[in-house]
Image 1 (tube, rainbow, N blue to C red):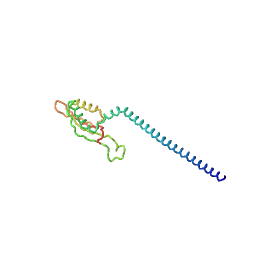
Image 2: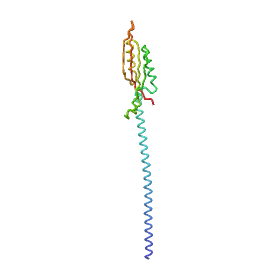
Image 3: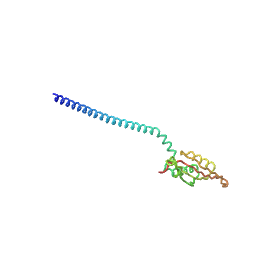
Image 4: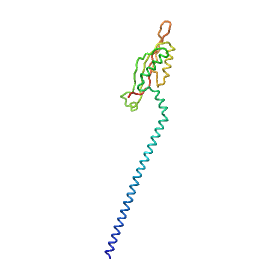
Length: 185
């Protein structure tokens, strides 16, 4: 009987051990599935958050589009150099005097500059120098009209001189302006 009891105890111990191992494996599988579900749920939450952020950025861009367009319209675009020259010449014609463009240049950022902000600028200055001949009133009107163009502009220099021409008074004007423009890529 002693042998039988040992066998039964051993068999019960083996069954108990098998039961414990079975429970361990069962709960380990459940834990693994719960972890996979948690990771998938977290990934879904992250995607939802990214979509919300993207939508918020799109909404913000839509809201500020008029302001961006307004600012962009004050810059000469990369192909607009000829257009701005033609516009200035047309303004001279409208006032009644021809405009002579003396020089056109672009002043960009110094390529040797170590300032990272300076290296990453997307704008540069279009430098125009032009001259006109006409009456004082026409030159003054022309300068006022050029100054009121819808661009980010600075008048760098103005030189006016009287040219005696008999009965009529003729004035000669030389102007230099700097206009902000988008940098050519």
